[in-house]
Length: 186
Image (cartoon, rainbow, N blue to C red; front, side):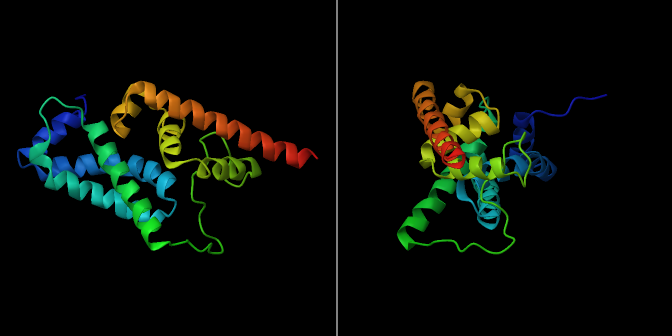
């Protein structure tokens, strides 16, 4: 049985003109990027647009991809930069998303918490309340199970800065979740 080609091999093949290699990369990464981006932008439709835009930028910048570089951090960097642009546009337009009856929640629940669970809703709300930089790091580290060095590459910060963001974000989550738990007990 032949091993699947690495991300970098697929990218090299795509740069060489193999359209099937691009499709393979899209199939491999679109679901992962959609999960990460959705946790950052909230709306599934906007997240899907960001993922499409990510792959469009990969296509446009394929000649700029450095031989020997890892593809995954490059993809995540593009996607998260586009997600940040969504937030900047929202700030400039002062948009607020209306809650639609039956709409999907803005942030997926952690893997070990049931979707309809009240605890999952509390965790999602607490995660959404974090500043974007802390939320990004926590989504990548905790929910996507990425090591700090990879998270640092993706967000364009030092490992130390990423650890500080994570520490502060986890502290805020604990405080927020502790407050809501205490309020329920009273």
